[in-house]
Image (cartoon, rainbow, N blue to C red):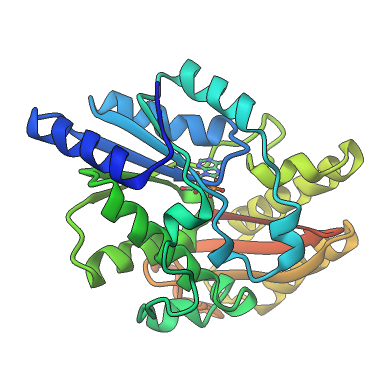
Length: 280
Ligand code: AMP
């Protein structure tokens, strides 16, 4: 695996590889890698692409300084995991390399409704930071294909919107959420959970499964409330549990039985914020 730290260097290298007719598959991450991340590398390798992974804990997307300060970093292990997964290129930039002009006068992306609900509502500014970093990364890494995880359902929609807005020539592939055998969605933030908290964390998956198994056409208010209560009783501080239109994230309170839905949840266990989702 080739490691680049400078934007100009990786850009030159990839432009040459593109000129030689090779396809680039890009997997942006914030490190503390797990099998969810490496599944994205495998997907890009299966497509026959040069797989490029970036590791950058993006300060612009953290609306909570505590979350940023405590975000796990396991760079040596990450490099090892990427080598094993057959990743071809790692981009490991510094903040000044990513944002040479600083982050203050960053562009504002018109994300419309997506920025007002769920993660957008509970993490103000978060999706602007996501767009800023992904836009910059896609300028540096001219990727044919971009691999994202369904684990971050709303983020996938935001990045699709970014690619449309900025007319970026890349195809987005959304890969399934990898889970522990218990059902807990793999997440870098799980590293911050104690063994005891991990058992409670599983309630998010159980709650989403409950929604999936019990949804019926009609009013959904009571079902959602049961889901919120089960998380609260397991010791979570709930930001939201919602059922939304899978296509545009409109919140659905009354289901006609036809529309495709997604259940989404975000909740804190102690100071660790976990998110998950499930297509219903
Ligand atoms: P992150 O490092 O959390 O920014 O995630 C980098 C990429 O990995 C994003 O596209 C995530 O959606 C994806 N990802 C994170 N967790 C999982 C998972 N459990 N399964 C599949 N993809 C994931």
